[in-house]
Length: 215
Ligand code: Z5A
Image 1 (cartoon, protein in one colour):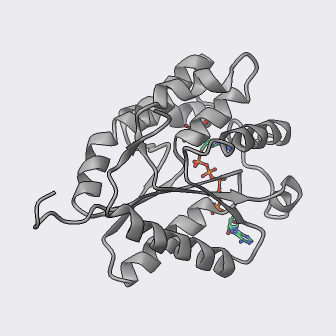
Image 2 (spheres, protein in one colour):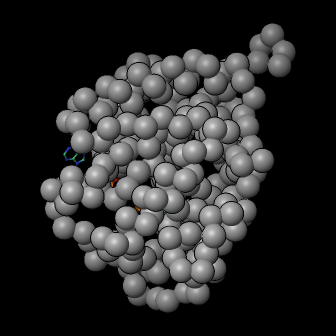
């Protein structure tokens, strides 16, 4: 932390149930931050472009079957493989806007029979800790108005309700900086709220060390 040391970027995560608008909002946030002169990049998990990501993608598209523990560990490995480049970018002052993270990992697997939330969190313990996690809150009825579920694995009404309950449990953890967002508002209103929270976070994070998740 010498006199010339630059300010680090912020790690900002968007989470939420299916069709809450995470991808829409990540794109808009990145654009807005770029226009305000910030160095910013978008990331998404799963990142389907890597070898591990391709295994996950085939599983989600039901082109392959994987044992439930195995796929959970692959989702986690898909995050860990990005950690060196994430840390480097953050240190260089680039803010990362991330579409889903370890919270989706824990919520989706623990919604399966025979899994507990605690086990599901373990492989992701120590990941770069987000400076802010915005949870886009949308009721199943409101989500239904945005169209049918797709064809991918997990896009089933009952399962999504259980996932929501797991997210509710995760949001009770005060060691994570959660911000709940009412995702039933218009795209522009949600965007305004998210941008305000993000700019505040970018300002406070630059003077704080990057944390370790769930540790
Ligand atoms: N998964 C896992 O199991 N473990 C893990 O560790 C991780 C993920 C990281 C694929 O993820 C699956 O992997 C996912 C979780 C699991 N399974 N499910 N379900 P993904 O990120 O590839 O999932 P996705 O299917 O791309 O995202 P999504 O949840 O379906 O969509 P979204 O990003 O939240 O929403 P969107 O695409 O921005 O918007 C949906 C539609 O609503 C679209 O037509 C928009 O134009 C519209 N929209 C958006 N905002 C609004 C508002 N405000 N009003 C009206 N309409 C709106």
